[in-house]
View 1: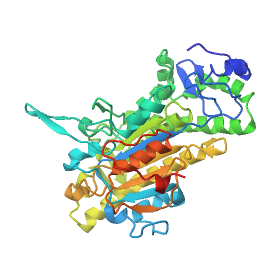
View 2: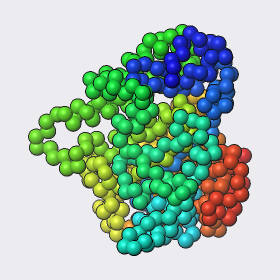
View 3: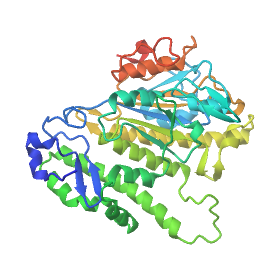
View 4: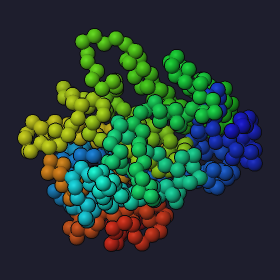
Amino acid sequence: MNKIPLVQCRDSKSLHRRQFLLGAGAMIGLPWLESWPPAKNPLNGEHNNSSPKRLVCLGVDLGMYADGWVPKEMGANYTMPSLLEPLKEFRNHFTLLSKSDHPGVSGGHRGVAALLSGVFNPVRIGGAEVIRNSVTIDQFVANRIGSHNRYESLQLSATNIDPLRTLSWNENGVPLIPCGNATKVFKQLFVDDANPQHAEQALQDGKSILDAVIEDTKELNKHLAISDKARIDDYTTGIREVEKRIERQRLWARTAKPGIPNPIGQIVTYHENLDAILELAALALSTDSTRVISVQLPNTGLPIQVGNLRVLDYHPQSHHGKDPKMVAELVSIETQHMKCVAKFLKRLQFIKEGDQNVLDRTQVLFGAGMGNASSHSNRDLPIMLAGGGLKHGKHLSNTKKEPLCNLFVTMLHGLDIMVDKFSSSMGNFDHELLS
């Protein structure tokens, strides 16, 4: 991309050509700014002052402990379950759906891959099992609203995962393997592919990639309203905070650690990495680099540390057999999951877009392909839907046993994708969630 001098940005005819701050090895996407005149963005044909609709899907491999997740009461006046306590300030911004799942999907862990598609069809070819999945809702959406963005969709993860349990599958039934490495995701979003060496050296030297665009940033600020200057400051602060996390990982990796074993060659903990991944997801949404993201929460891959508990895999805790100690450990881990989700929602809510914020315009689905992991059940899945400008604040108990894909149809309607059916759906939840 040729660099367009920022002084030209006051001309509405040339403004739309500038979507990035460019420097040696850096390509920093710009967030939504009130100061831009309403020129069309050639990437998506929309005006710069329009706020797009988005979708984020988070999937947990091992379900959520039902006694800490499902409220006893239906409707708006339910008592907040323990696992949802970290989200209490967002009570009116999310909906809980219980007693819902995908009819016909079974197989315990193997059914995890069906969360976003409603379809799981393992077939045996010779001596190997091959998964024939269907398109997942995130990819269905990406094909319709993401084709003009820098990335049609992003697949992320708290750690590396088993390819056969991946969250996202394309229309050909091919699993889309997520990236669980925050450094790689950072480079994908902010390093210029045409000239990555400068950025790589800066990161290795502990410098900020923002140094490469500092002059452009100063020039940009000359043309911005005060509110937009605050947006740019918050945005660049977010980038720098992720850089600092990555640099801490590098420093720790280069430091001798006598007596401290490192059995898997990684340094950061599971939830530190998840926080970094979710912050990068928020930055990607705020710059309209993509409008569709999936994030997977597997059970292993990095050390999981909560208080005095440190494990490399919490699969044993999920198979608690009602043992009080194992249940307490499981709940502490899953509570940490929800604290990370709460930070993510708060970050989206903080990013303003006109008279709304990114959470207002982003549906965030959180769920799992297993209900009771202890018994390998794929029934009664834990499902939460937040944001997106929908009617929230209730616990909906699906006593009619409507397929979970009914919710997906309503989600599509909320994204202005008007379909009558998705996968196994037999209706929708429009009357509960749409204004």
